[in-house]
Length: 107
Image (cartoon, rainbow, N blue to C red; front, side):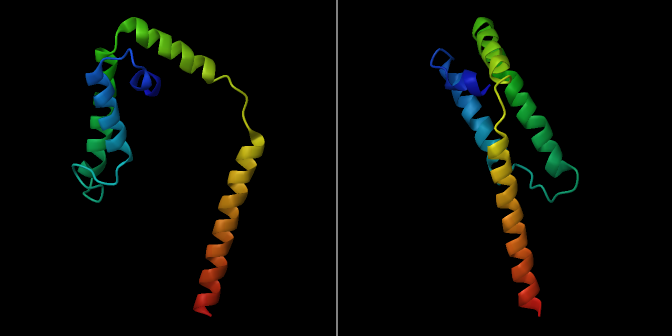
């Protein structure tokens, strides 16, 4: 869907809906807050897939096939192990810093 929303050949309504769905998925504000038992997570589990399904119905089939082939080809790209190592080291350093700060603050 990311490729379809960014393609100028995609109908404007589908592009707009894609942006709205992405904003909703990434937004900390939900229709039903996540702390509400069960319902807080169900709204995300229903609205986001329903929005993606609707976008798929709005995009022409030939364009969707083209974007799926592009996504499939992109999934076979090489993996950056150095990048992964840097991210893991950054998180480890942040965790150690937080632990060290908490330990010295409580002493």
